[in-house]
Length: 160
Ligand code: AMW
Picture (cartoon, rainbow, N blue to C red):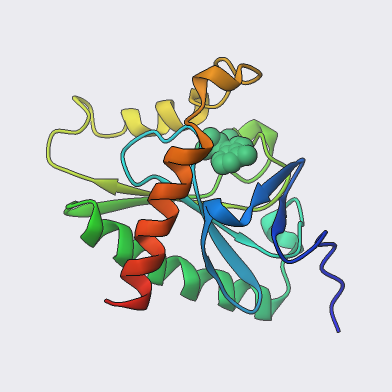
Protein backbone atom coordinates (compact mmCIF):
# COMPACT_ATOMS: atom_id res chain seq x y z
CA UNK A 1 0.00 0.00 0.00
CA UNK A 2 1.18 3.51 -0.81
CA UNK A 3 2.38 5.56 2.18
CA UNK A 4 0.17 8.62 2.35
CA UNK A 5 1.73 10.55 5.28
CA UNK A 6 -1.70 11.67 6.39
CA UNK A 7 -2.09 12.44 10.07
CA UNK A 8 -5.57 11.06 10.55
CA UNK A 9 -8.86 10.83 8.73
CA UNK A 10 -9.95 14.35 9.67
CA UNK A 11 -6.84 16.25 8.57
CA UNK A 12 -5.17 16.28 5.18
CA UNK A 13 -1.75 17.60 4.42
CA UNK A 14 -1.36 20.33 1.78
CA UNK A 15 2.37 21.05 1.71
CA UNK A 16 3.19 22.85 4.96
CA UNK A 17 -0.53 23.33 5.74
CA UNK A 18 -2.90 21.03 7.60
CA UNK A 19 -6.32 21.11 6.00
CA UNK A 20 -9.39 20.43 8.10
CA UNK A 21 -11.97 18.00 6.75
CA UNK A 22 -14.46 20.88 6.81
CA UNK A 23 -12.58 22.61 3.95
CA UNK A 24 -12.38 19.47 1.80
CA UNK A 25 -15.38 18.85 -0.46
CA UNK A 26 -14.23 15.82 -2.45
CA UNK A 27 -11.90 12.96 -1.72
CA UNK A 28 -11.11 10.15 -4.16
CA UNK A 29 -8.73 7.21 -3.93
CA UNK A 30 -5.67 9.35 -4.70
CA UNK A 31 -6.79 13.00 -4.75
CA UNK A 32 -8.73 15.62 -2.81
CA UNK A 33 -10.31 18.99 -3.52
CA UNK A 34 -10.46 21.92 -1.11
CA UNK A 35 -11.83 25.43 -1.01
CA UNK A 36 -9.33 28.31 -1.10
CA UNK A 37 -8.61 30.55 1.86
CA UNK A 38 -7.86 33.46 -0.52
CA UNK A 39 -9.78 32.91 -3.76
CA UNK A 40 -8.93 35.03 -6.81
CA UNK A 41 -12.53 34.70 -8.06
CA UNK A 42 -15.64 33.16 -6.42
CA UNK A 43 -15.38 29.37 -6.62
CA UNK A 44 -11.57 29.31 -6.97
CA UNK A 45 -10.76 25.84 -5.59
CA UNK A 46 -7.75 23.52 -5.55
CA UNK A 47 -7.32 19.86 -6.49
CA UNK A 48 -4.32 17.95 -5.09
CA UNK A 49 -2.87 14.47 -4.97
CA UNK A 50 -3.23 12.90 -1.50
CA UNK A 51 0.49 12.12 -1.54
CA UNK A 52 2.22 15.42 -0.79
CA UNK A 53 4.69 15.53 -3.68
CA UNK A 54 6.18 18.86 -4.73
CA UNK A 55 6.35 18.77 -8.52
CA UNK A 56 4.12 17.61 -11.35
CA UNK A 57 6.90 15.29 -12.56
CA UNK A 58 6.77 13.43 -9.19
CA UNK A 59 3.29 12.02 -9.84
CA UNK A 60 2.83 8.35 -10.66
CA UNK A 61 0.56 7.47 -13.64
CA UNK A 62 -2.33 6.38 -11.39
CA UNK A 63 -2.08 9.60 -9.36
CA UNK A 64 -1.97 11.66 -12.54
CA UNK A 65 -5.04 9.94 -13.99
CA UNK A 66 -6.97 10.36 -10.74
CA UNK A 67 -5.89 14.00 -10.35
CA UNK A 68 -7.04 14.92 -13.85
CA UNK A 69 -10.34 13.06 -13.73
CA UNK A 70 -11.02 14.64 -10.32
CA UNK A 71 -10.14 18.05 -11.75
CA UNK A 72 -12.61 17.54 -14.60
CA UNK A 73 -15.36 16.65 -12.09
CA UNK A 74 -14.52 19.63 -9.89
CA UNK A 75 -14.28 21.99 -12.85
CA UNK A 76 -17.77 21.01 -14.08
CA UNK A 77 -19.11 21.41 -10.55
CA UNK A 78 -17.77 24.91 -9.87
CA UNK A 79 -18.55 26.22 -13.36
CA UNK A 80 -22.18 25.21 -12.83
CA UNK A 81 -22.61 26.23 -9.20
CA UNK A 82 -20.82 29.57 -9.43
CA UNK A 83 -22.83 30.47 -12.55
CA UNK A 84 -19.76 30.73 -14.73
CA UNK A 85 -19.42 30.23 -18.47
CA UNK A 86 -15.75 29.23 -18.76
CA UNK A 87 -12.83 28.02 -16.65
CA UNK A 88 -9.20 28.83 -16.09
CA UNK A 89 -7.37 25.65 -15.02
CA UNK A 90 -3.73 26.21 -14.00
CA UNK A 91 -0.73 24.60 -12.36
CA UNK A 92 2.15 26.72 -11.04
CA UNK A 93 4.83 24.03 -11.13
CA UNK A 94 7.90 25.26 -9.26
CA UNK A 95 8.84 28.54 -7.52
CA UNK A 96 9.70 30.45 -10.71
CA UNK A 97 6.22 29.61 -12.01
CA UNK A 98 4.67 31.12 -8.85
CA UNK A 99 4.26 27.98 -6.73
CA UNK A 100 4.27 28.81 -3.02
CA UNK A 101 2.88 25.57 -1.55
CA UNK A 102 5.26 22.68 -2.17
CA UNK A 103 2.53 20.18 -2.94
CA UNK A 104 1.20 19.77 -6.49
CA UNK A 105 -2.17 21.53 -6.85
CA UNK A 106 -4.41 22.44 -9.74
CA UNK A 107 -6.17 25.80 -9.53
CA UNK A 108 -9.71 25.72 -10.91
CA UNK A 109 -11.17 29.19 -11.45
CA UNK A 110 -14.72 29.75 -12.74
CA UNK A 111 -14.77 32.58 -15.32
CA UNK A 112 -17.51 35.02 -16.30
CA UNK A 113 -17.82 37.65 -19.01
CA UNK A 114 -15.97 40.81 -17.96
CA UNK A 115 -14.53 39.38 -14.72
CA UNK A 116 -11.16 40.97 -15.58
CA UNK A 117 -10.63 44.02 -17.81
CA UNK A 118 -7.75 42.21 -19.43
CA UNK A 119 -8.51 38.49 -19.62
CA UNK A 120 -4.98 37.25 -18.85
CA UNK A 121 -4.74 39.47 -15.75
CA UNK A 122 -6.06 36.42 -13.92
CA UNK A 123 -2.54 34.96 -14.22
CA UNK A 124 -1.03 38.07 -12.58
CA UNK A 125 -3.55 37.74 -9.75
CA UNK A 126 -2.82 34.02 -9.40
CA UNK A 127 0.88 34.77 -9.09
CA UNK A 128 0.50 37.39 -6.39
CA UNK A 129 -2.76 36.68 -4.50
CA UNK A 130 -1.22 34.48 -1.83
CA UNK A 131 2.05 36.42 -1.51
CA UNK A 132 0.44 39.62 -0.25
CA UNK A 133 -0.29 39.39 3.49
CA UNK A 134 0.67 35.73 3.38
CA UNK A 135 1.19 35.58 7.16
CA UNK A 136 -1.83 37.64 8.21
CA UNK A 137 -4.72 35.28 8.99
CA UNK A 138 -7.19 38.20 9.13
CA UNK A 139 -6.68 38.54 5.35
CA UNK A 140 -7.83 34.95 4.82
CA UNK A 141 -11.42 33.80 4.69
CA UNK A 142 -12.77 32.52 7.99
CA UNK A 143 -12.89 28.79 8.70
CA UNK A 144 -16.69 29.11 8.91
CA UNK A 145 -16.97 30.70 5.46
CA UNK A 146 -14.72 28.04 3.95
CA UNK A 147 -16.63 25.24 5.69
CA UNK A 148 -19.95 26.62 4.42
CA UNK A 149 -18.68 26.69 0.82
CA UNK A 150 -17.22 23.17 1.08
CA UNK A 151 -20.45 21.88 2.58
CA UNK A 152 -22.48 23.46 -0.25
CA UNK A 153 -20.21 21.84 -2.88
CA UNK A 154 -20.33 18.47 -1.10
CA UNK A 155 -24.14 18.57 -1.19
CA UNK A 156 -24.11 19.37 -4.92
CA UNK A 157 -21.90 16.31 -5.50
CA UNK A 158 -24.18 14.07 -3.41
CA UNK A 159 -27.41 15.36 -5.03
CA UNK A 160 -26.50 16.64 -8.50
W1 AMW B 1 0.42 28.33 -5.48
O1 AMW B 1 0.86 30.00 -5.40
O2 AMW B 1 1.45 27.46 -4.56
O3 AMW B 1 0.17 27.82 -7.05
O4 AMW B 1 -1.11 28.33 -4.77
C1 AMW B 1 -1.35 28.07 -3.40
C2 AMW B 1 -2.83 28.23 -3.18
O5 AMW B 1 -3.19 27.65 -1.96
C3 AMW B 1 -3.28 29.69 -3.12
O6 AMW B 1 -4.42 29.86 -3.94
C4 AMW B 1 -3.58 29.90 -1.64
O7 AMW B 1 -4.59 30.89 -1.44
C5 AMW B 1 -4.03 28.52 -1.25
N1 AMW B 1 -3.85 28.15 0.15
C6 AMW B 1 -2.70 28.23 0.87
N2 AMW B 1 -2.89 27.74 2.11
C7 AMW B 1 -4.19 27.34 2.18
C8 AMW B 1 -4.99 26.75 3.20
N3 AMW B 1 -4.51 26.47 4.41
N4 AMW B 1 -6.28 26.47 2.92
C9 AMW B 1 -6.79 26.76 1.70
N5 AMW B 1 -6.09 27.31 0.69
C10 AMW B 1 -4.80 27.60 0.92
